[in-house]
Length: 386
Image (cartoon, rainbow, N blue to C red; front, side, top):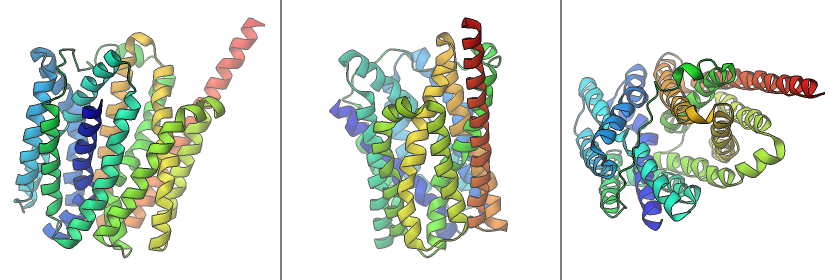
C-alpha cells in the first residue's frame, strides 16, 4: 500500500504542476487569445470521452494493465517535455492532443490495479487515493514558486520528472490480469429508462463542468486580480488541501443529514463561491475563500458517486459510474472550458465565474427536483404499505 500511496502522490503531483498554470503559460509566454486557450484546454475532456474506452479495450485484449500503465506514463512524460518546445497554435493543439491521449489512460488503469490490490489485502482504498490530493496540492505550490524563480516552462519539466519517478514506482507494483475497462454500451438501454439517473446526469454536467474548468482558469483569475504565479500555487494548495478532510468525513455527514441535503448544501457553497469571484473581491479574501472548496467539492463528489450507485441496478452499476464520470469529467468540463475561453476573450475572467455560478444553481435546482421525486416515492410506498 505504501507503493500505491507513493504512486498516487507522484502522479497527481505531476498533474498539479501542469494543469493549474498551463492557462497562464499559454497566455503570458505563448501569447494565445482566450478562445485559442479554450480550444486547447477543451481537448483533454473530449479525449476522456472517446479515447478512454479504447485504452480499456487494449487492456482487455492484452490482459496486461501494468504494462500499458508503464507505456502511457513514459509517453506522457515525453510529450510533456516536447510540449515546452512548441510555440505555434496548431503545434500546441497537436501536442495537447497527444498528451491527452496517453494521460487519459493513467488514472483509470492505476485505479483498477489499486482496487484489486486493496481487495486482496483488505486495505483502505480511500487512504491510499488520499495521497493523490495531497500531491496535487503540494505540486501547485512548488510549481508556482519554481515558475517565479525560473520561468513558466518549468511546469513541463516538473510534470515529466514526476511521471518518470512514478514509472519507477509502477515497475514495483503487483501485476494484475483483471480487466480494467467498463464497456459503456452494455446496460445503456436500462439506464436510459431510469428518469432519476438521466436527470442526475444533467446535474453532473452543470455542477462538475465548472469545477473541472476552474482548475484551468483559476490561475488566470488570480494573476488578473493582482496575484503572482507563486500566489496561484498558494491558492491551489489551500483549495485542494481542504478537500481531503471533508472527503474523510463525507460518509458520516451523508448518514447524518441525508444524501440529497448534502448535495444541495455543498452545491450551494460552490455557487456562492463562483458568484463571489464575479464581484472581484480583494486578493486576500480570494485566498481565504479557497478553503470552502473542501465543503463544496470535498462533500459533493462522494455524495454524487453514492447517489449514482444507489439509484441504479447492481448489474449495470459499473456502466452507470462510467457514464457519470464521462458526462461530468468529460462533456461538462469540455463545454465549460471551451465556452470559458470565449467568455474570457470577449468579456473577462470575472464573467466566467458568473457563468459558473448560474450553471451550478441550475444543477442545484435539479437536485431539489430529484429530492422531491424521492420524497414522493417514499410517500407512495408508505401509502401502499398502509
